[in-house]
Image (cartoon, rainbow, N blue to C red; front, side):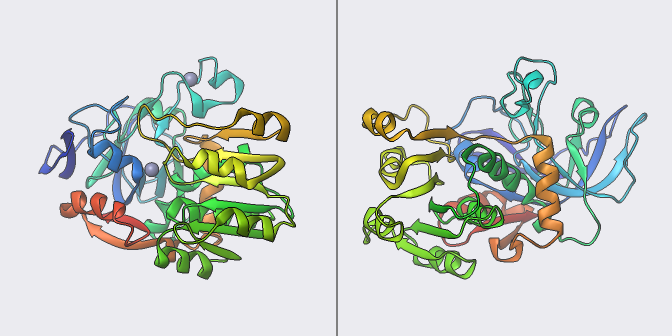
Length: 345
Ligand SMILES: [Zn+2]
Ligand SMILES: [Zn+2]
């Protein structure tokens, strides 16, 4: 089969490798779509190396159909559409036992150290099948929409931490695919005013199309003044950072009201540091949260939202590339021209 194999920084080989055969307890997925994200780019550039195994098949936003099942697999039928929760938690560590499996101390991750979805087929190993890291979808939803279940599950994990709710004003810094998904789920959670900031005019236009109340040019406009004006001078209830630039942390804190929540959702370059005035946290009682990965149940929640048409997947997945062009797909996703890029074998 054709697969995108990571040899090292800047070395992604699109090459033929043996098609895996599912052993006992394993499932073989025929990949229908694999969307690429900023993490793939960081891995390709060598900016993210922790937990990444050279020789791995890249891709962790995986949707496909079940092509073969190994002995002893129950509950899955050949031809079922399915999506994957790629971070396979252990189920027994300190975090797993406290309902924080997304923070598991010994995860295996498809597309990092287990072969991922930028291939014609993807093997789901036994421990992932046993722990139900593969979720069956209803038939009829396009594969490119289903593959959004992974980033969407991570966004739902963020929402659970920053708790946007009824009547809230939310500021989202960055109108890429992740920012647009945050906007969509904040709306579904009852936020009544969403302000989106980005430097790209086309991304701001997409944010407006998808329901942003106010869009702000992050280079030319004064975001703080806009937010203050839109909130009677108080500041936003929630600010989500969806771009991995460390200086945005101080900006986000300046935008939130007293008692508000700031979410550092994006991953930052390795070794980053950010300067903030700690008294703004102290006197303002500001809650600072992070979010990375997702729980299996958030994959299930994401899937229901996508199947019910509540996520504008057709707008968010703006471009499709063939597997042969996987490197270009990852690079294009960084160009800011499209929104979410899908690779379809
Ligand atoms: Zn991703
Ligand atoms: Zn664990």
